[in-house]
Image (cartoon, rainbow, N blue to C red; front, side, top):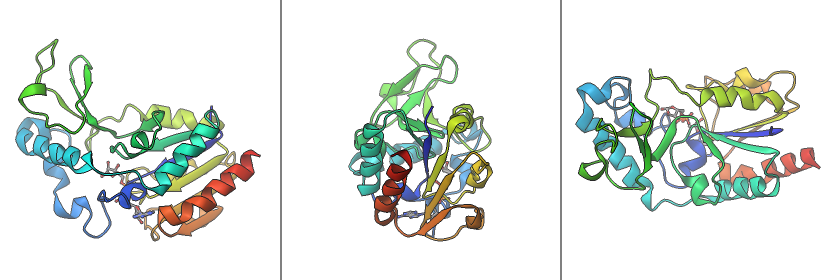
Length: 232
Ligand code: APR
């Protein structure tokens, strides 16, 4: 398994023009999590919930990966077995940058899924309306393939497993409120890099070997250099 984990959050896509969640004017300042992204929303508030994710899909349609996504994908291409790209993001910026081997912990916006049989379909940037609303085999209503607050996140098992062989842990663009990255800093990690715009109350930056408070596109060259030095 990979020696290097590049773990990202909304901040890595901020410079592509995709809103973060908890920065000022982030998504959760303008929407109520309880109404459109919590377990149960689809039963009591389906229309609004579906509409919210239709808008998110439309929002990423013309968005482009930025320099950070591109450099991370180039590195993965160069060292396919040594690098794991793990993200909390549901956008497709890494995929648009050419990398398909990405672990999306909180789901993937272009996909809709049947909760009953697991049928999954990539609808791109379309709306989850008449054309796609029912599962073709069991006629259950499809839902966005997004992990809501209070729901199980099945890919977390893969996240924990990925740390078995991890020696370099790079964190880019997450406040650490949902997944506290500090908890992965065990003795096996020889190099840890934290890159955010600013300190977060949820992250203890003294635990990291290197801290870069700057935009991901400005930090990425140094990060890539450190990883390549480690792998050399
Ligand atoms: N470059 C680097 N970091 C940035 C940039 C940037 N250009 N812009 C913002 N950031 C940093 C901020 O400093 C902040 O620490 O990105 C972080 C964004 O934090 P959040 O908005 O909380 O996003 P994230 O941590 O990814 O949220 C986790 O919460 O709502 C859920 O499921 C959703 O996956 C999401 C999870």
